[in-house]
Amino acid sequence: MNKRDAQKTATRNKIIDIAEKLFAIQGIVSTKTIDIAKAAGVAHGTLFSHFETRDILVETILNRKLEDFQKQFLEINSNQEFHCVINSLLDLLVEHEPFFSVVFRELSIVNQNLRNLIVYRFSIIELYVLHMFENFLSANGISTAMKPEVIIQHIFSLIIHYLNFREILNYKESIILGKKDDLIEVLNFMIYGGGCNE
Image (cartoon, rainbow, N blue to C red; front, top):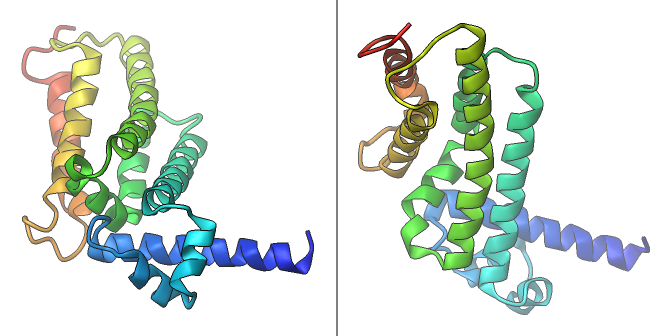
């Protein structure tokens, strides 16, 4: 790669990094491209020479962030017990919470392609967790009153609910960290209590 190409790549990555930070602070919808360009120290036209439209920039950032999150999650959980998988998921969400809080809060107002991308990436993680959960139930001879997929869907729905309402619930720190014990308690209740058939 020559010097010019290296500089273009560095500028593109800087725009992406700055935009991701601004999205986490201001929201995806509220962040203007002119603000991203200014914060990145580039001309507004330069931003559009790297990203033809604002939607392409947003999609690039979401795709990178969700792909990185998914990769991190799958790497740290390849040989763990189910409860460790859930703890790892929650810990990883805490690390990325400001960004994902914005993503889920604004999910209904971003374009359909972005919604599909977000749903697709989180579905992969949810399916992985479901697979681990089914293995856990089978290995321990546990039969639950609810279908395993309903239990996992419920846990993911609670996580998304908490992320979505982080600002409304006025959490200064991490809402996922604050609700982690509750989430584990709900999961354990659905596994062991409330009509568990052993």
